[in-house]
Length: 136
Image (cartoon, rainbow, N blue to C red; front, side, top):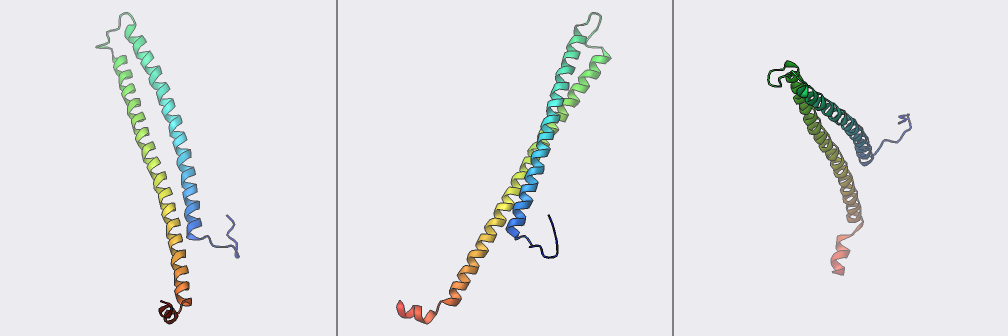
């Protein structure tokens, strides 16, 4: 945005709308990135499950005592926890986006109420109370 000497200062309504638009853009971008991360974790989880099953089926491996299987199982739990945290973060990010749009809506409503108040004030200045009483 060009902030020259003669540039017009945005109204609170315009500023709120611009801020809301920018916030929504950032939120959508971050949510898409989180979706990609979740898909990557899903792929890793599936691959790890296949590896665990393959190793458990291998002859001569005791699933109860095999340290490699235990390590892979811990990795699987870690991946699932990461996915869970990403889902929680995505929900919180969505909440932030909704709050930003609600704030922009409130700023717009406040601006509209201010304009109506100003118009009613001007109408009261123009109106003569004595003439109104005579007509009533």
